[in-house]
Image (tube, helix red, strand yellow):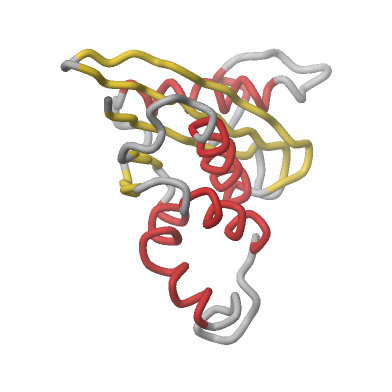
Length: 164
């Protein structure tokens, strides 16, 4: 069994109300099926935090699923997450969670949690272009919009009420 994870996060304003979502797909014998998906929202956050929260939540869920010890592909439309986990994190850890200009890494608590979770599996981090017709990326995007819309108390719910 192979496992693919798609994640997305976004905000209405940055900072502003934000949402995140993930979809976990199991593939066996050439057949793919969704085995888990979820979303969440925060009233005041940033786009980058929501992208990270999506990846954290997805890997926390994956850790509970059978077959998660196999290689996992994580697809994100966030170069911040993909490059952060594939390239930058190694330097950050060597430099006591400081960037190349010696400033503390932003969203450090989320990066640290993501790093802990990533140590549980062999993971390949892949960037996928957002809003380009990828079925599962689009599904995550819709759930992210629903998450943000769930915070609206006096506005209409729907994809046209948010700017991403």
